[in-house]
Image 1 (cartoon, helix red, strand yellow):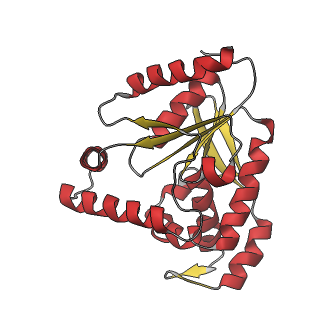
Image 2: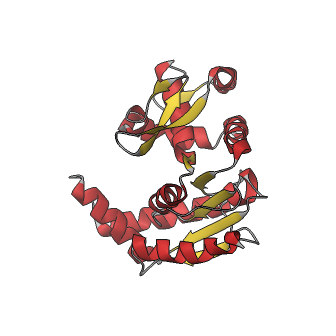
Amino acid sequence: MTSLNKNIIIAVDGYSSCGKSTFAKAIARELNYIYVDSGAMYRAVALYCLRKRIIINNNFDLAQIIKALKLIDIEFRFNRQTQKYETFLNNENVEEDIRSVEVSEVVSLISKIKEVREKILKLQRKIGETKRMVMDGRDIGTVVFPDAELKIFMTADVDIRAKRRYDELIEKGVEVSLDEIKKNIEERDHQDVNRKESPLAKAKDAIELDNSNMTVEEQMDWFRMIISRFHK
């Protein structure tokens, strides 16, 4: 396990299906840091709204969602048995619930709401007060933690990203076509880069990692080389 001379925040941003979460989790294990899944936070808000029937058939009342935000608290706790961080919504473990198809279908609606993004931003910064944290997403180094000590921006060839996602879904028994996945990734890239609220962008001081032809262990070797400067 690598140890550092000071506590820092590590921001991992990048395109979809680049393996950001896998990489960020590996970094957190390496440093014994907390890992924060920013996407899980939006999923937790979506789950709360579904349970309270604020969202029904993809329709919602914006005023009700804004009101509900005051009642939502999200945190991450490490499960020593599974060796994984789990999402807690108002003190309830919802790690499995937020991965449901129902939540997946509405989370994009939730993430576009300005007030929701502001709420999540406050929660993220609260978690980051003690540092010793790795967070992945699309605007972590540019919006959430612009002063993060280490920013990594991940990218990979779109065909390779599509194949990774295809293999992942096939392994889970989901029938999909490679062409369909590639199209979806390209559309997601376009939406991420061009969205009005917190678009995907590489921070000026971010270090780019193209992991098109790298294994997770090779990525970690690259990370260990980068993080060594914090020992000086």
